Amino acid sequence: MTNRRFSIKLAALAVFTIAQLFPVVLNPADAQQLTDKAKKVGGKFMCMCGCSQVLTECNHVGCTTSAGMLKDLNQRLDRGESEDSITQAFVQEFGTQVYAEPPKSGFSLVAWLMPSFYLLLGTILVVFVISKWRKRVPVEALAGGAASGISPELLARARAQAAKETED
Image (cartoon, rainbow, N blue to C red; front, side, top):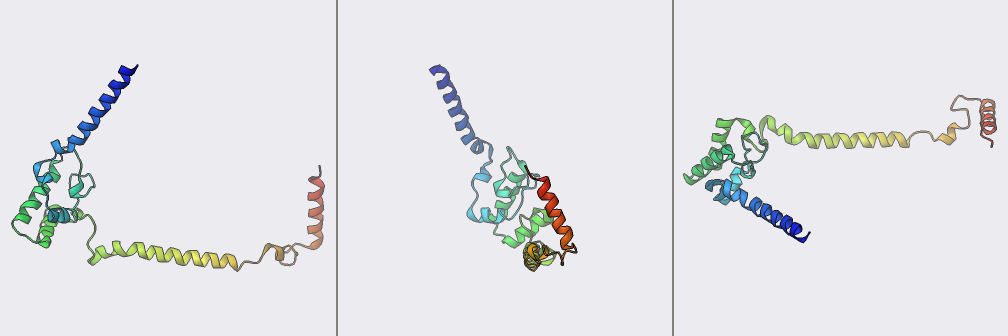
């Protein structure tokens, strides 16, 4: 029984070790040697392989798209291109879906403003509903019969019948 437990622990250790080494073996050297500036600029773009992850964080096994994009990014930074020119080149090549977040200008500004607008609108709605609830006439005032349209005789007869039917 102890040999089996030892074998299981050894297999788990081997799997854990391989899993830790897996990214190092499969990632290209270009992805391993990103400078801080490349990480900063690459964090503004999405990987275009369809994984919906940020370019510098794409973890697909053997993703050639992110490797190519990172290589292109490093080459452009090595040539001394500015962030704006790199951004324009990537947008020109891949379209606006390459942005990790929409730019804070033009029509894309709507994407930044709508959450605040919806929060404000929801807050106003909640305050309105609560104020309406607080202004309602209490049930005790309606029990008198005048406000509810039920005569006191009918109310007394209904109470007597309910008491009679619920007697044990």
